[in-house]
Image 1: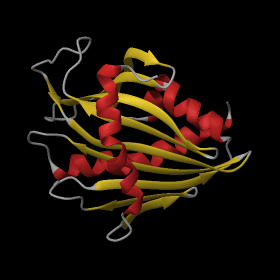
Image 2: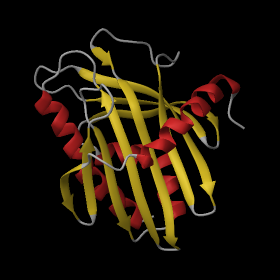
Image 3: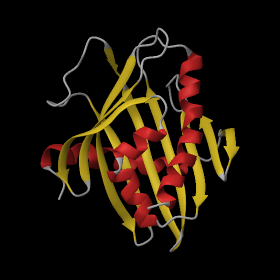
Length: 206
């Protein structure tokens, strides 16, 4: 049972997260390799592109679900620009509140996002893991040295192909807020390709 204080956020964002899969036009392939494909497209009025990653990997869906929901330390190690990825609050077995913080780079301040991470079983062969942005949390006071960004989308669809094969479909849109060079934003997006390759290698060993 989802805690009442977060239920409205999760349920209110559900249809918008699900509708991402209906976006068929406008995708541009940015990077590919190791059976992992990275695409971007314009989304509404956002200056930052919506990113999509598609991959099919020889891993079990339950292990993939456990990794993306529980193993925040492993995910942090796979993300070169990640300074912190921690649980701020455990709500129930499928819901936690997380803090994601990037490293500062050159003259660009660190960015951080507080989100409600939720795992939902869509059907017998599919999971959806989301991280829906919230403005504040008592365990994450705002700092003048860190910009509180907007995580518009973080949605991972995991689909079982067979017991040892899983399809990954991931959508991400992070609005960094403030002044930040386009080159830095683009590098963060492109980094996701290598990140998922590293993720899959860890899941294979689980």
